[in-house]
Length: 83
Image 1 (cartoon, rainbow, N blue to C red):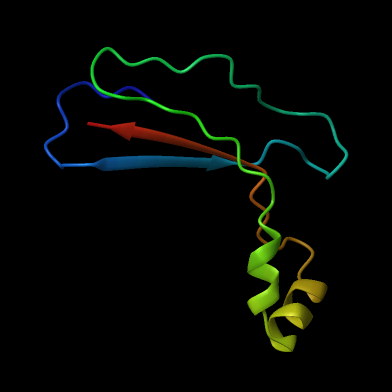
Image 2 (cartoon, rainbow, N blue to C red):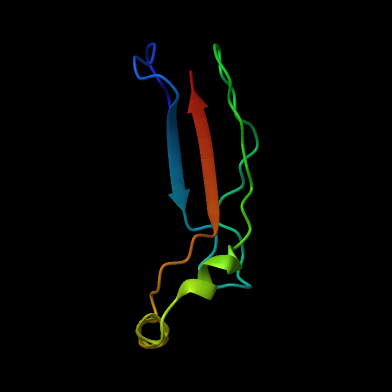
């Protein structure tokens, strides 16, 4: 992702989410090597799977995820904060 100019929105946060593997124990598809910025602040957070979200899930959500084999799985999340 390249920002070609100054961001006019204060505290703008760009979030890029992409799957990093085809299976849970599969080979990684991407490896983030470096994140750069010419101005401002840029940070990278590696987020493991958030298990606290599952505590608030109803039985209907659990049944939907059971039958939906392509359920939402966030494997890699990249946060870039542009200031």
